[in-house]
Image 1 (cartoon, rainbow, N blue to C red):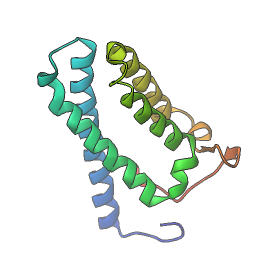
Image 2 (spheres, one colour; image 1 turned 30 degrees about the vertical axis):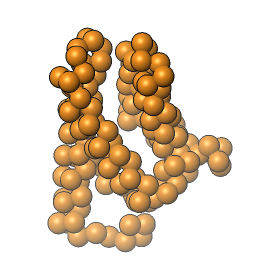
Image 3 (cartoon, rainbow, N blue to C red; image 1 turned 120 degrees about the horizontal axis):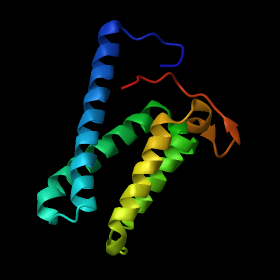
Image 4 (cartoon, one colour; image 1 turned 180 degrees about the horizontal axis):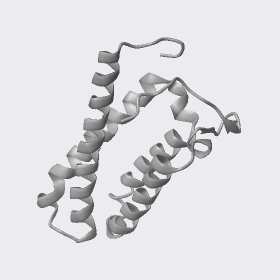
Length: 136
């Protein structure tokens, strides 16, 4: 997309697709998070967990295919860190609520932090800009 213009129709399809994926991801996080934080039986929130994980992976792949440098920017590094923390749910099952809260805080930092933080490259030790992204 760098240097290229996309059609208005393509822009809107991409924008609405990404927004829909994000909305489904947040729904999954809310459902799974409620179950985890309130110690609800797993069978009641497991489908929300699947929704959150599948949409999260799709959103992550969207970013990587759009521009691989996402992986070396803090927004990508912290997202991979969040995935690692979610993997800790298995060996540290008693700490799921605490791990979930930490993942949630990192999510807010990644989503709402200043661009200088989100676009900071751990390789270049400075902010790097990537291809223009479709917000959503």
